[in-house]
Length: 431
Image (cartoon, rainbow, N blue to C red; front, side, top):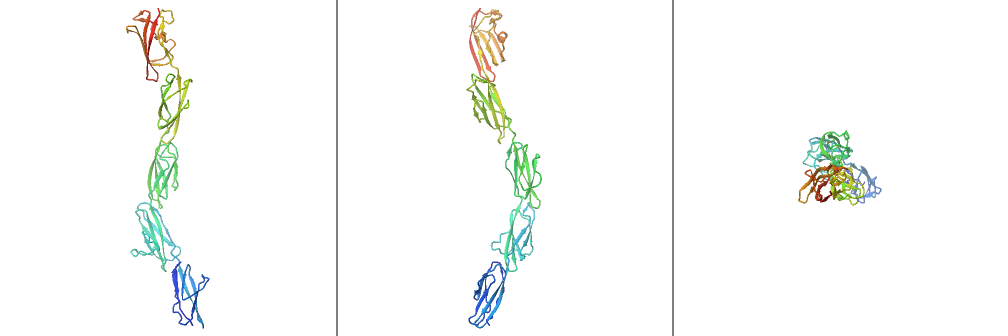
């Protein structure tokens, strides 16, 4: 009889092994046929090679010309450890972590906890202890990775890692300068969830803890405090400031206070509180983005011009203002003769104007340079009877001056204009 023996084998799933006939028969012409239920084609030979993913019983039949012998070999396949690590993975500084290991296969017999990568395939570090305790306790000083290496009774090795983070939350805003009540999105990072507070208090800020961003609408410059929580409920605080820039208060400054048809130029300036940039629209079609400028009006046939301003603060919020500036026809006229004869007509000599004048000085001189008449007024307003009220009556020191030519001089300023106008001429007294 071609007798022989076989040795049962324990392996890890996926291993490739050779199984040999033990104590083969000495009889000549013996054929060994291996029948694996997971392989459709039997194998003939003394050494069987295979890769096994499950436990398998193989039938081996030895056949000689005169007889046969049958035996079986069992390949016991053991799964690698299927490890799960659980525990708080986001901690606060100084907090202790407790990591628990479990094996879904139930095959793990020995474990080794490590703070260094065990490599591939994983191996126990001979310089570190082996344990069967599924709980690992550690107080990390920074972000780290904890590894577990597990070994089954058949030496099948597996590993699993878990990342531990020390809560060091960050807080950002989508805008750090805004106008009053503009929306500001506040977002926390690197914590499990977050809560918020504000100084001064902001009633628009959501309450409660959440992992989501929040939106606030500050009325004034506000410091927001974020609490970033770890998994155990511990927290760290971070702050940021949102600066609220007031809306501009649109205001236009211009000089003079009217458009002078003789010199139709205005100096225009944006004096808006909190304004930093400007947009001008003038009724003659002119636009500008200067803060201040001079503008000449080519068409002064109307009664007024309009100046419109849009003033922006540093974050682009705007206010508007507008002014209507009158166009003034200006004239000062001085007659060239008068007859102070007491008949009630043209008895006095004075200049004529329909405009308001500043720093008026009106003088009359004889041919020897002696001043015969002086009128001064810092804020002069014309009137229908101004010649009768203010004019020269043709006398000097109470006596009539002779008929003839005399020199007059008139100086004045126009309101809102520092230019001094200086006019002179002659006046004839007719007696």
